Image (cartoon, rainbow, N blue to C red; front, side, top):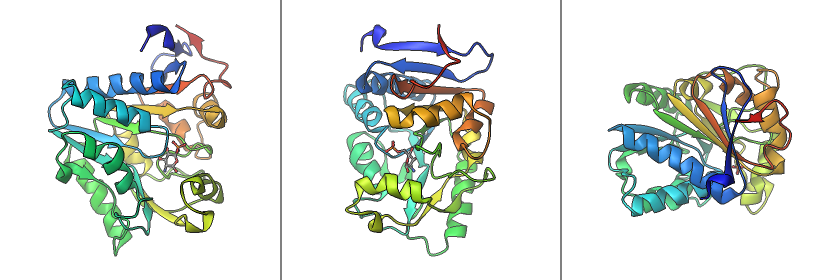
Length: 263
Ligand code: GLP
């Protein structure tokens, strides 16, 4: 990665979200992987929060490469993923468990028992959600949470609405999200109508957060998150109340920002 491929921006506010705008998806993935692996290397028994979606695939590929080269060690990393469809079987190739195994867990030296996702077949979703929150607290909370962002500003499956929900919960997906995610299924009919999602509480309790976003279709969500009102109608906007957030995005995703200037 050339240093000129990544530029740091600031909106001049103290404690503001730190922003890196990258020339390409590869530069974005390399920058995000450098941040994540740097943090993992600083602390034993690291608790890593993970996201699915197409945005972090490059980050995971790069982390696997760094692991292969001995530059980051996952043997003492515990992971908690943000969300899972409901209902869905773990073996289904559209499940987020399948995704994580494919893009990261099968490629690094992580102990599979230390990788946690919500159970898409939990008989009692409410109990599953409570147990998940308890497990995260018992692990000492998340050290670093990786996030993507939905076109409607969702993080995990915390959909736009009139409130921020703190705990892990069962979500009814919006038509907008079902439509957006249908590109990965044979048809929109096959997209599960519900999901289990970590709430805003566990995300905001993470010690640091790295959000990745690329493409023009994310520009409005990024603009609303960083420069709009802090409102549950753009769930990602709450990240501005966190003290240690980095957005690593490409030029297209940054194209609607007006308040950030190069450092
Ligand atoms: C999905 C996931 C989110 C993800 C978002 C964006 O629905 N639940 O965690 O960040 O949508 O996905 P993508 O990166 O594919 O655009």
